[in-house]
Image 1 (tube, rainbow, N blue to C red):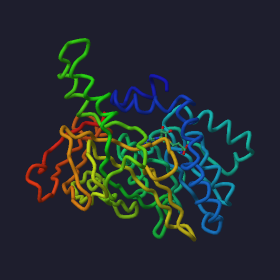
Image 2 (cartoon, rainbow, N blue to C red):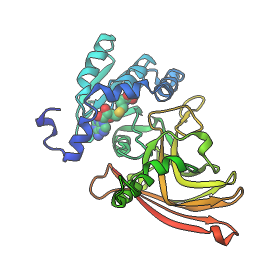
Image 3 (spheres, rainbow, N blue to C red):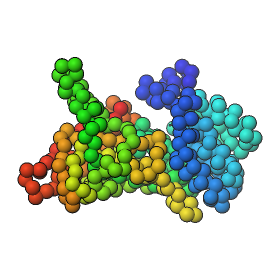
Image 4 (tube, protein in one colour):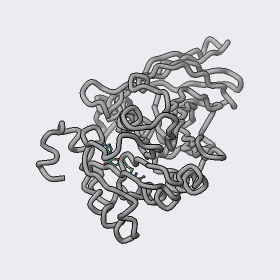
Length: 336
Ligand code: SAH
């Protein structure tokens, strides 16, 4: 982006949009086949919904979703993106012969004025790590409130956040235990920082020690910006005798407007996606027995400093008859 375009943005916002200027990040998203094929199937299998409709693509990037919609028969697609990748999107749309179907508009969705009052369908890929980190869902909700015609559709429209507990002794020792003794020195001040940063990484399914628990669901038709800060209970049933080093979280996405709902999961049981899973190490290790429960609450809210970052808090308690293994605690994290 030119200095002109970014000068009105807060530094963190300029940095956010600049990260989408380069094709590398778009390559990663396009190559995520679970992600991209889900959108493709949701759109191509529902041509009856797209035929002759006006579509808004919020954060079009390389314009892939806009082209899916145009090919599915949309009357016109308005594709908005703040990043300079939109210049390439314009060329891509041109070489694919879709200039008359797709109008690309560079700018922040919040600031631009669409050439139409209302749209029939909003498509957007807005999900971040842990669903809401660096997420642009606020922008999609604003687009919904400003532009979606009554009875209009949102693709996707539902999201569910899950929590589970894992055994991760070896890796926790590598990442957290490491700071106990670094070439003979006590580096524990860095251990506190390491513990407070959730880790985005792939978790092997066999490391999952409990049943998953649905912690929070989002309906894009009705959710408000305020509800994206949440504080919800969870209850994890232990599946086997083991140790617990961390809680993990992932999300599922649904396109329920489809004739037959299309969905995908970013969980440890599902095929790899670039969102991986998010790992929250606990300070202590829990010794758990099959049938016991780990109950608690998880809360997430935008940080005061930067609304794209998240303050996350986990309170937990191991419910057990065994007094020797009773455990409870509170852990706070910052995702930035
Ligand atoms: N739709 C594309 C890109 C998704 S990444 C695909 O599926 O491959 C999200 C894109 O949204 C980025 O290119 C980013 O620049 C853009 N974006 C995020 N917030 C925005 C906003 N408020 N206004 C305009 N574009 C935005």
